[in-house]
Image 1 (cartoon, rainbow, N blue to C red):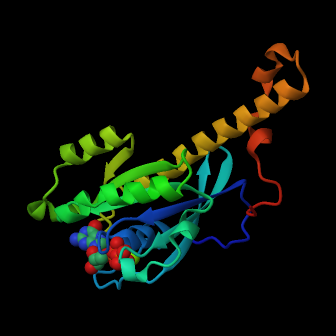
Image 2: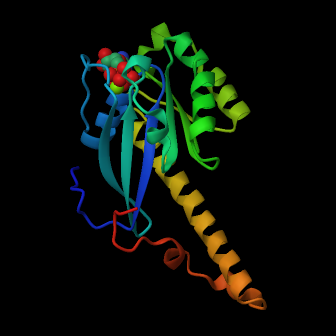
Length: 217
Ligand code: GTP
Ligand code: MG
């Protein structure tokens, strides 16, 4: 499914992929954006992007996904990755415990540079390598619950749960953003018209959140 940047859309959401090198971030993204997988993919240098349009209800959302380098030496200006990002896929490799242990480091970075209401989905990738598994699904789930994150296991190679992971992330971003915009609008009404009573309940969510001049910040 290919879309150009100029396609009509109602919302544009930026999300980022983070996690250690070789956990499969780039392949998760190419699988989602182009249904493509490479066994011999090269480490990402700096950052790469992909877009895909998604329909939620009657709204078209353009997801702009930033695929960042896991290797420290290939990372550029970290703060720029997080600027404007509303969600993150935090990826580890279920066959390498070090990538799971390092999630704490990535979470510190998210909390330092990301917005406090950023949606974070923790992803254990490479479930096709079950025989080499070092982190059980239960252990992943436990950590996600402890940290207050959503959780899913995927296989970019076998195309298992990849679409679901991105859709869950984007749907959650949409919910959080709509709620935030609605609250902001309600506060605005409250401060400008002191006795509006129940009229706040009649606010139209769409008019409260819709971008005009689609796909621009
Ligand atoms: P950096 O760009 O260095 O941060 O790495 P990355 O996280 O983007 O990893 P990448 O997608 O390049 O994948 C690294 C290696 O893991 C490649 O050899 C992929 O083919 C392989 N790989 C990625 N996803 C899967 C998967 O689901 N299963 C298996 N078996 N291999 C995978
Ligand atoms: Mg990569």
